[in-house]
Image (cartoon, rainbow, N blue to C red):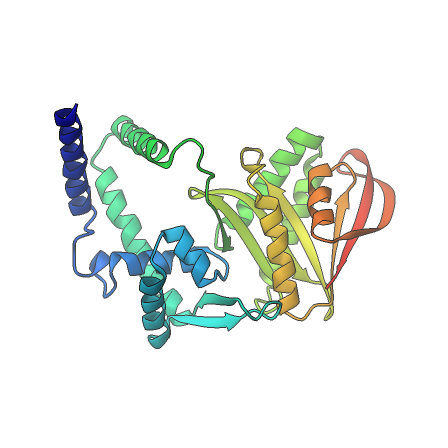
Length: 307
């Protein structure tokens, strides 16, 4: 048994040496940059998450607090990262990539995609699928069946609005028989959001699990004092992971920090799961009105949260 285990350990180490060499992880600067592999991972998380704290980053990456603190200190000195103290809780400091940080990260992300594509491209499609299946098997076995998937929230980027429109149209048709006029409404909302986007007072959050989009929500300006929560959606395969609660919670946090006094939202009485999330976050029902929309007889509800 000992020899068997030793041979397996040797096989894993051999694979590690092979793979780290293949992806260029052993170079002094990852992706031919001035940053280490760990530093690039930190930049990736900052680019794909919405204003995390240092402790959240450390938990996600499994990094020692002191080591992460040194990386963040260097990034701050290089003007890649800025720290913003939470208005709702002064104990929390949120991290943001600066414009310079975004300019540094974007080419690194493109180099990473190019490098992985160069590994896959020589393989026929069936062998690519075999490779991906094997990687998923390794991930599943080492993560453990009981481990809860990590939910990552990030800001919107090109291509996301198309996903939001498509998934609202398809999912609401499947679950509530809403017709295509609902999809048209979502398209109008997302188009207006992009055209009139005010980054200081508006935000879209995209939720991902293992790189796959599983949810979205928007907070938009209704007036100087009132924000409106819109288009909360969680994919069926991600329900039960707390995605909806995290998305709504981010809306509340951002609204408070942006100086709004109230959040309002418009929903339908048949959306029971969403209503429970709003109630848990402190929203109260202020108005109900029957109407016929999206091919259905519905009861519209207006909810409000006083900040």
